[in-house]
Length: 301
Image 1 (cartoon, rainbow, N blue to C red):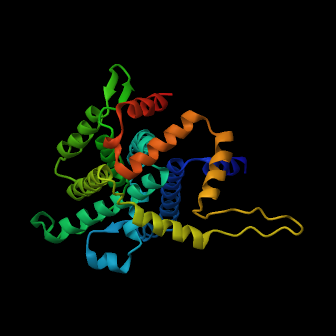
Image 2: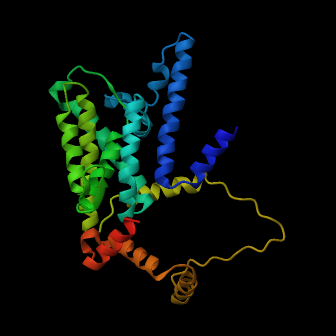
C-alpha cells in the first residue's frame, strides 16, 4: 500500500526525534487494535495491555522486566499521546540545538527509567499506596526529562509564542512543571510521582553537562552495541572495489580528512560544529557571548 510505503519512507528519512514519535504512535495503534480484536472475541483486553504496562509492584516487574521500557512508549488514550508527542517534538527540536540526537534518545530512556523507579519506590514505601495495585503507561516522564534539561541548559532561549511574542524558555518550562504538580486532583498520584522522577533525571543531566560530564554516555554505548548486533551487513558485490576508511588518530589522516571536509562544509557550519562539541565537553555555560549569539542566530532560522 502507498500509505505504508510513505510511512516507511518518512520513518527512514526522519531524524531520531521523528523516529521516536513514530515508534510511540505505532505502539499505541498496534496495542489498541489488538485490544479491540480481543474484545470482539470475548476475551479480556488486559491480556495485551498487561504486557506493555509497568506494574506497580517490584515482584511483578521481575516477571516482566521489559515493561520498564515498553511502558514509556504506550499511552492510555488519544489525548494522552497527542499532548506528549506534541511537547516532545517542540522541545526535542530545541534540545537538539544544544545536544546531539543520540543524547536526546538516551535522555528519553533514562528519564523514563527515572520515572519508573520513582513510581515503583512510591508504591513500596509511601502509606498512600498501601494495598494499592496499579500500572503505569505514557512517555510523560521521558518528555518532562527532556523539557527540564533544555530549560536549564538554555533558560534565555527565545520562543515566539502566539499572542505573547518572544518569551524566554525558562518562563515556558517552569509553568509546565508547576502545572504538572498543581493539576493533581486526587487521581493518578503514581503518575505524577513518575513525572517528577523524569524531571529529576533531566535536572541531573543538565547539571552534569555544565560540569562536562554526560550521564547518557553509558546508555548510548549500550544502544550502539545493540544496533551493531541487529544491523544487517550488505552483501558484497563482485568485482567492486571496496572503499577504504581510515579511523587512525594519526595526524596525517586527521589533516587529510579536515582538508576534504573543508571542501564541502562552510566556515560557519564548522564553527557551529565546534560550538556543539564545546557544549558536549564543557557545558553550555562555557560558551562565550559571541558563540551563544551565533548559536541562537542559527536556531532562529
